[in-house]
Every structure is written in C-alpha cells, then in structure tokens.
Image (tube, rainbow, N blue to C red; front, side, top):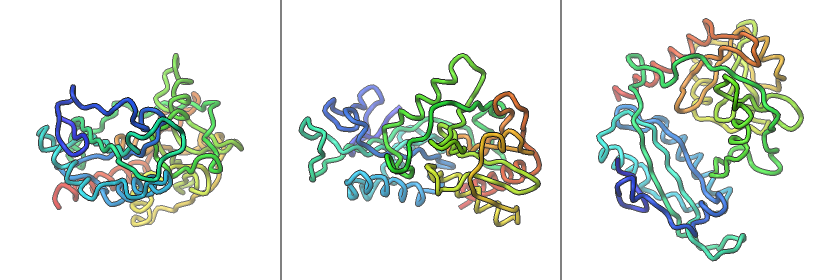
Length: 286
C-alpha cells in the first residue's frame, strides 16, 4: 500500500508525520472519511466543503490544498483501487511547543486508502448484520464547547462512548446530548420511522451534519417519504417501527435492537437503501 503524505506518495511503512505536528500533539487537525466508487470520491463537493469549514473553525481556512482531490485520485491509482475507504487529514503542522497556534500555517496533508467492496445496485454491504445499538452514559459535547460541524482529530468523545460498549454485543453507541435527547451514534447519524414518517434529530442539536445523512434526506424527499427533524428521546427510537444508521462507510445500516428492544428495518428503510444504491450506481455510470 502507498499513502500520500505532504505532496508525495510513500509506502505505508514510511508514511509518517513529525512528532511535533500539532495534529499529533493536540488533535489540532481536520479530516474527512470518504468512499470512492469506481475510482471517484462520492459526494466530493460536500466532503471538501465540510473539511474547509472545519479548517476555518480551527483558524486555518486556507490549509486545504487546491489539488486535494488529485492527491486522492493519485493514491487510489497507486494502489490499484477503484472502490475504497478514503481518509484525508489536514493538520496545522509543526509549530513551536505552545498551545496558542501561530498565525502562519504549514499544514501536513495525508491521504490514506483501504479497499472496500463495490457499492451500488450490484454491490455488497461492508456490514454483515443489522446494528445492535446501546445507549451510553457519555454525552455529546455541547455546541458551546465544540462546534458540532467541526470534524477534528480529537474524537475522544466517540472513543469514550465506544469504550462503554466493551463486553456487550453492541455495534454502535447511541449518544445523547447533555440535556438527554438523542443526538447521534458515536460515528453515525440516527434515523427512525414512526407511522410512516422518517425522523432524525435536528441539526439544531450538537449533531455532526453527516454527508450520507444529507443524501438520505434528499432521496427521501424525492420519493415523497414524509420527513421530520426534531428532538427525540431514547424511548422514541426504541418504540420506532423501523430504524437505521448512516455514515460514509456503512451507507444505510438497519438497526436490529436498541438497548435490547427489537426494532429492525422495514419498507421505508428498504426504500431508502435502494434509492441510495441507485444514486451510487449512477456515480459508477457518470
């Protein structure tokens, strides 16, 4: 495998950044997880926009290189991959050893890739079974403390949420905000169906605006599926007729149980998943 580090392709074993890099020292960095279908990144414009927005939040708005997409394509080509996991990271780079960032930025830019199955209508899921979900005590960081739309290297809240799942059969943690309503999964957005209406927590809460989440909402609207965003408690998800999770890698993953309560997929979940696969298939044909 070869990765792309600061403008050049290097073998994975040699793909390193300096220990003084602020992405390593402080988590002072932004990243995006993307999927390539047929050699091209799906929803690239949305991923790049979110990456730039995170960098702006971190005070390094010009850190994302203009040729980042070309670096990703070069990494895919070097590894002979057309269907892949892609992670692009942009750190503030090496600066003097103090917390306050310097105004001038010399970012470290890293692209790593891993093979994934083909997606789309003829593809297969990366997950084997519907997700087992458990509510955790760890809460989502309040918006006043950390902007929810900033996708940074500091993912400790998600890590701590997943640690609570150790010793259980759960695949994903259901995370609430500080007031108690459902926010999201540790690495996913949450959808559920009640009386035919597709519901998901509103971005007014501390929720990462997932790229797959946005695609699902668009596809549901195109197909006339009733939609609602709002504030919901755990009991609403447990009592749902259907539920599923979304993220870039899982795409649309049905939920088997929430805290041991059977939920499962259903006709709306199947319709959304089929529509998503059709959108991906169009990406192959483009």
